[in-house]
Length: 225
Image (cartoon, rainbow, N blue to C red; front, side, top):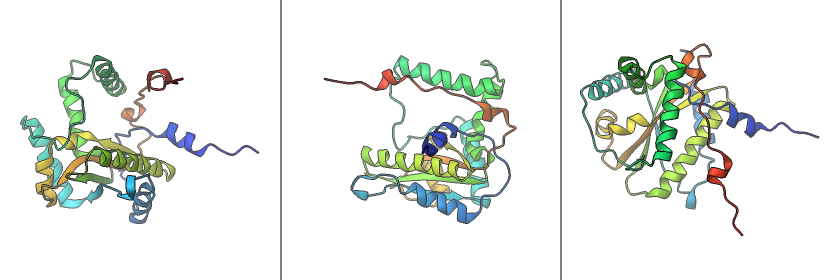
């Protein structure tokens, strides 16, 4: 008897959604998704990382100040290194292809700086998703903690997908850790990892038609012996 391949369906259907309906996400549903996310594997069961939901005036003021800081060209030292420096050309090509897919879906030309900047600023508004999460990690956890938190984040995304919700991780928030800590009343030991937008996808939004590709199996899988 054939059984439906639920994981395969969720993995293929999940994508980074950057436009949402205004439909609220029930608090009980959000809590259920977060509980499911914590079922992800964790070394020594340490379960690192925290998820902070921001809303109301706190969210509005934070988004306002993040946009202003970015427009002013203000720079902060990030709490962790995400991209390799220098960026190898093989990875740079993937980065460029991803940007081309995003702005191509929006019909924003490469030389349309205003259009690209307007889209980038939407990161700081959590793409107007009804749920805005800030993800933190306690200082000193080490690389293994980020690996565990990454698995929990993917668990969150798949759990949301299974419940009819959509998500988008927002790395741009990591560029302003001090500003975010100030707004949320966090101490310096709380490293800012990323943001997450969560809600119901707008099926009519062109940006949600963005399609990226994944590298071929032979690029990352080898058989030895």
